[in-house]
Image (tube, rainbow, N blue to C red; front, side, top):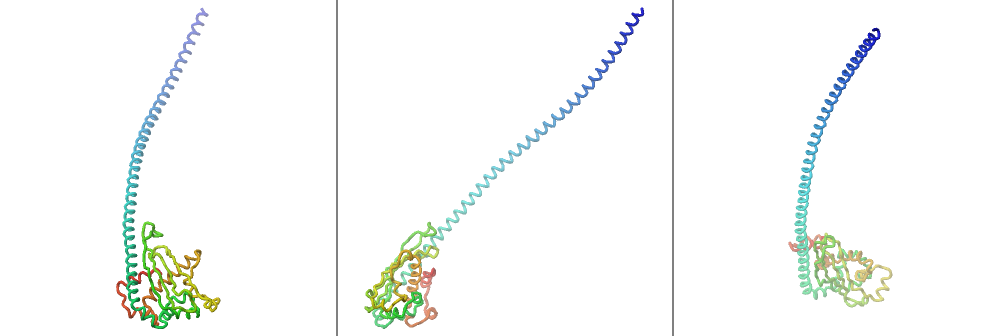
Length: 316
């Protein structure tokens, strides 16, 4: 009996313990379920946030792509506009250059033609008066002596003795040649040429009494001053050289010089030749009478053509 009661008591105790364990498990399960729900809720929130971020990203990306395309298109339009501006300006510059080119070349032609016409008229008059002038003793001697360029040729006393035999100074073979501009290759300019001649009487100082100097140069002042000189050379007598000694000579102006110094000497000679034409030939009578340039300009009315003639020498 006691044993039976003991078994019953133990069984009851076991049942109570088991019930307590189940209750605890149920409580734990409920807690875990609640935590799971919280996690699920957080996950859903995170998923919603991710979706929103993706939507924002997609929207921003689409906007950026649209902006990029618009920017590229705008850049292309801007480049095309800029290129059109460049092309337009280039056309304007080209048109202006052609106009300037034509005007400059036409101006060169006008200047040369006026110069040539003036000198041809002078030659006609000169031929008419040549015999009378040759009868005037020492005419060309005084003309040369009173000219401004003579001092640049360093004449000595002996040279002035020889110049007393000078009977004529003249110009001939006036011509021009169209050539490319040396600085602006698309343009054209004129090479101008002529021959200066000095004629002497027979005298004890010269074996050759007819001296010439051929000159050719660019007329355009914007051009590189290309110039060529061809001298005839001189044949002076032993008497001349005995008296000359170590002095410089006026007649070096007609000597043939070496190629290595040609450019330097040619440019100097070119300026002197242009002054001989401008001063000595066209105003020889005034220089013979020792009139200065100021009195010449006051007494003579050059007129419009002579203005072009003076422009011909502006690049000196």
